[in-house]
Length: 131
Image (tube, rainbow, N blue to C red; front, top):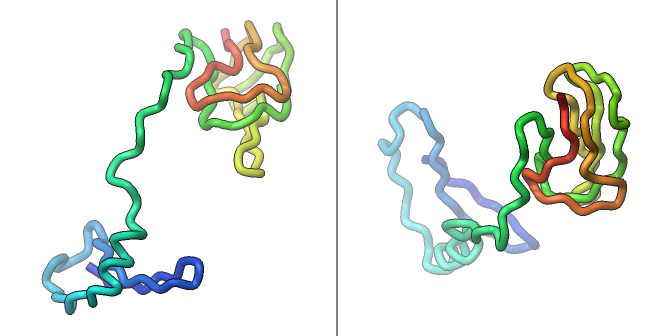
């Protein structure tokens, strides 16, 4: 275990962090946190589990290349019938002001394109079909 002091938005929190695989883990004893820092740390802790999505994304068929994240399609960089090689750029997505390139996982031919620039996509949604 390691004791860390973290500052978030000007507030300091003291937290204990377990380092997986650390030698003699648990052999170090840390002094108890003050009630003020303990309460603050508890308030800053993330929820135990994420809420379930309201509806599952559409099912992807065999050969579909799916979105690795939720975002917006910036560009579709291939056309139906195009021959692609593993690693070729297929689609560019934007999420949180950052672009993510979706590359071809293998060689093949683009069978269908399911999205267009400006479309919102959820994680796991099919983007293109690769034959």
